[in-house]
Length: 202
Image 1 (cartoon, helix red, strand yellow):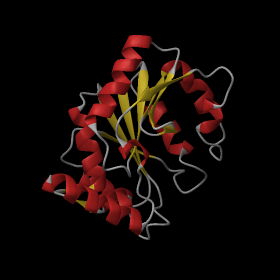
Image 2: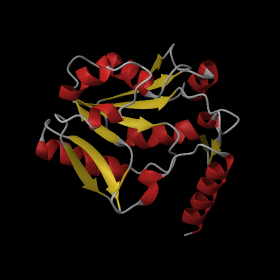
Image 3: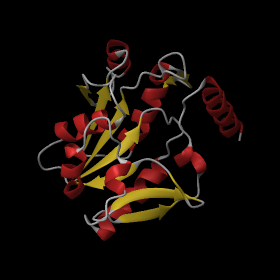
Image 4: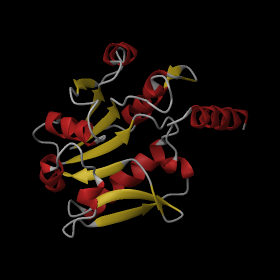
């Protein structure tokens, strides 16, 4: 069983408004991300909310996801949301796909490549997409790596686990730069809208 944890709790400080709720085509940005994850046939999808909790949960009301609120969203790094997500997953889940909620360009093919690599190579590795030798998102983390993640202080970050000597990383080479693109600023948002229009115009 592979579960997805979609991280949508951030303060959006640099954007100046909740980036999860920005319009993106027919949906909000977070709905776009969730729609791709759901289409990838995850065994369960958990969305972590925090800032603008009520509005984000309203936007997701029609989607078949489970909402988990992270009361520590305003403190420390994104790690507290990752931890909240891992704690909420089903007891028989064997791996977590960690998805940034501010990457509306997320592609189902990338998720498929990551999950196929996990199923082929097993639980000894953390699976990270790589585009032109640059690490991207989302990431597949097998259950064996959850305890050290959960043991970190919330002020730390996931990279601490990935840098640990016991962590084995399998790089999944992808042919799309979308794995590198999140939305932190208004300029990032305009870039994503322009790229979407370009794709639609074909």
